[in-house]
View 1 (tube, rainbow, N blue to C red):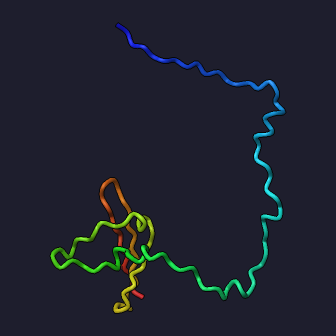
View 2: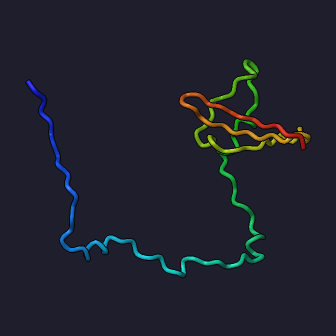
Length: 116
């Protein structure tokens, strides 16, 4: 006995009326939507936007576990592939940057220490 398969034959579609294809083109954006205005002094007075609270929970700022000081908790997905700075003010001689990324089921955190 053989297999039963569905077969679809696809041929290149040639429209009868080529002018009707132009109706599918995207319209041009208006020139007024693009500006090259200089920034005013008011633009520099504004406060920067607030950082979302979940980005404060980086692995660099998590306290160590007493039972396993080398172990870190599983990182949240929102902090992956971002670079972070340690906010510990007690160490003012060293600048600490870190980035966590995922490779398959493992999480890798790279930490860079630099003296100020």
